[in-house]
Image (tube, rainbow, N blue to C red):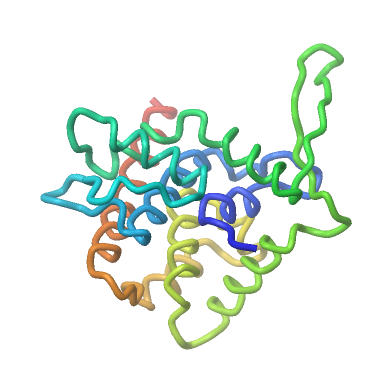
Length: 220
């Protein structure tokens, strides 16, 4: 089953009981980042003088990714990676959850907190974690333990995990600084297209800047 980076990231960020993990505060930014990476890989957007520009408006066939493509294509001016990480996140988590439910990987349950406030949970439809989540954890684990660079998509997922503070969920039991240090040691992912490498590099900077600003704002 093909699965995009935003879907993989969300699966890593939700617990077995279907609730978001404690370290998922910045998940929405990571989901937007995942969509931008997919668009770059598909040749739909590319960085031009520090701005992301649609270079091919043809839909990819993935409704989550095409949602982002349509929004970027309809914008009157090009935006930076940081601007699009912030703009695309609105409503994106719900779209990704709906997609995962529709694909039969998660199921939606309704509960009430304190018998008053309705809330939704999204546990797996199986007795174990969904197969794509198990595969993502396997790839990340092998990359962390190995000496050779991870494949580009695993590298991108790892970058999104670090950029949005999901290390405890994706790498349980490993100190965050160790995980970040290992990722940095691998250098740039070896994408075939330089535009994709540039887009991912700008995205990493954008995620770091956005989450830093949000954290500082929350502590002020």
